[in-house]
Image (cartoon, rainbow, N blue to C red; front, side, top):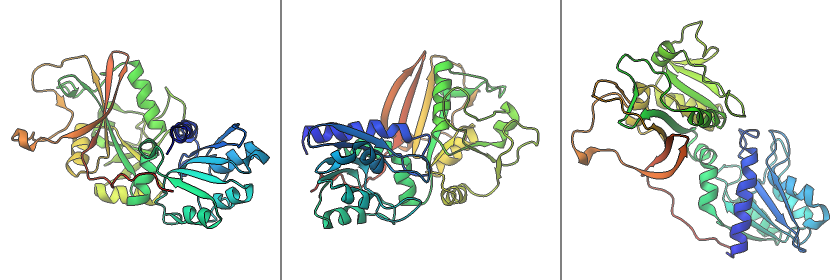
Length: 338
């Protein structure tokens, strides 16, 4: 694909970010339509029951959509849901070319959107800026492939790996910018889970207060006191896999795990974490009897140490955020196809 295709798809990715907090459980999709005269029109997925990204871009373009190229981060839908199929809107508008970031693994789409457009004589190219799109839509894609939410673990720790003093007092390890970032992550998550011990020790609210966006559904592993600030919440006493299956059926795309050490260790040991978000403060607890990030025994040898792959880092005031993902087998990278 051309540099223009890459740039236009990355523009669509930027546009899609505007939908992340408002369109769930639908995927946050962006579309950029380039008219024959070079004019550009964009759209992103509206709240549930309203227009999808492609239809928004077509609406903004009007007659300029005839003969145009439309770039869309996710394969257009080809079924009647709360809205009519986007494929039919694209065909009716007279678009001549559709460029797609990634195919939609949803069983109701899964290539049928691409096939419908091609059957109508429209040129379709797939796989442009696919890595960028997969990263942005990771929770949605994971949910549609597995039926479970994308699990993100967030831990704040000292530089020597402790999340609380030996007294068990949690408090705040990181600063204001890190706190705002955590609230942003909460807003991007459909549900958040902590252990009952954390509820008793810290009495957290687990709401969004220092960022824009909705507060996630709150889940406690165990029983929460009736007067805890986390109430109302869902109390869960079953297994973690059963929890993920249940939340997946409820339409939860992303689950945020936010402590404590025992909960983090349980999800980690079971291989259920899809992304680790570490906020590391320039602070040293010292010694070896404080509360570690993960409870339980450490690896006996270096050969047994769990190793992931570094996705990104950023500075948050005096703190550093590191995002790490497991080194799992991924689907083969495919070249863009026409």
